[in-house]
Length: 101
Length: 478
Image 1: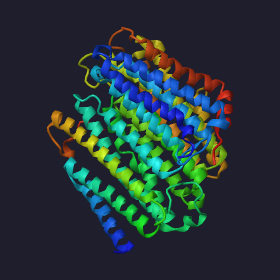
Image 2: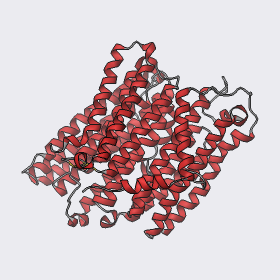
Image 3: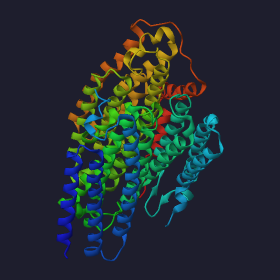
Image 4: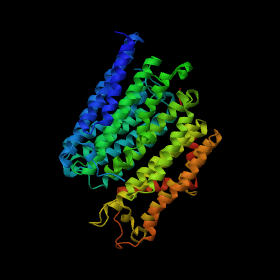
């Protein structure tokens, strides 16, 4: 286990996340992509903390904060999806077309 | 945790916000308006507490673990709190909000304001990120607050998807920053980092996160949809408070802590500023909905404010602060009039926020039409009004720092913007009115309008006191 293998993994996760968030039509799918991006950041932080800056805990702390924030983000997001699903009966982004101009 | 006492206005506001949420349990839904009063009173209390920190700098200002409390941050905190008070006054007169959830509405608005206050003091990416998320999460819910209205839902979900995406990018940027610099603290970074490409990538990714909040060009797509969908008081809030707070962070980072010139990012920032105002102004041309028009106008205004950050000199710093102050007054005013006109638009006329709702406003309520005309003229930067002073300051900063093409681009943009602002004025003064019934003006909206018009007119004619207080506040730590 080396730093470069961790970074390769996190970089791949981040790119997969971006790809998913940009190409998915389903809101839930986009949310999953965004979660992957957050987790890539967490993996980075843990790896950097372990390999490059083993003295402190700043990276681990930040990763904990990001985990909590990502969870809160999903809660709010799913609530909004529920609200729109109740009114518009869809979870596909191309059908959210009331607002344009 | 050293220096926690420096943050007592923020802590007090957060506690009061939770108090408002609890008070909701004990107050019947039909008395929901009481909670709005609690909300704006809490903001005024926090405003006074910030005043205390300014009057006793030896005790209440300094650098803490993650934050730096200095005259500059206190100035922006006062602006954010002022915006909150005015938006809650607008909220008192906004009839479409569900009365049963007034506590949640006020608590979320106050928590978002607390987040912005933390944000403008942040000198560490950890605090900046957490504060930014506090603001984002509260405002996602606020945009979607009219649960039964599809447009509100749709605006909220678009805002949420963009917001979550950009904060994930920012989190990745912060992780790279930590890897290269070994810390998330922005103070005392070594100059040798500036030549590290990974560090530069990290800074760019973090910049994207703040650009989202400030609606700077590549991250501005959410603005018109979220602004149109949101309840109007929330739109007014979003168009001002998070924007100037994000600008304050960019100002602190790129002129003080990590100068853009040292990172060789000045050209990129200048390009983003020019792009932002051009996109904002030229898209606003084609809008028929006043909220969307003001949304694009607020993108353009973000471009102007950003010029001060690009300039990177003292004049630019003061220009950003001055313009932010004036921007609060003129934008709140414009949204207040828009809300009032839309709330009393004739039934069955289609889009209540359409330009046609403004037809003949001058014949129905001349004072209101005149006030709106003042706000619009100020937004476009016509001389006797405050907007001109702000623009003059910012454009001179650009010239002084040698960004001639940026200043020229900004002047051309200002001229172009007159067209779409005057489109509203044309509807108000030269179109026939559907009826001669004057608009009913409630006391709270009237108060908010009075503050806004006073700011726009008085500081336009007599700007010396404002300029003096901005110059006194343009000091920073460390």
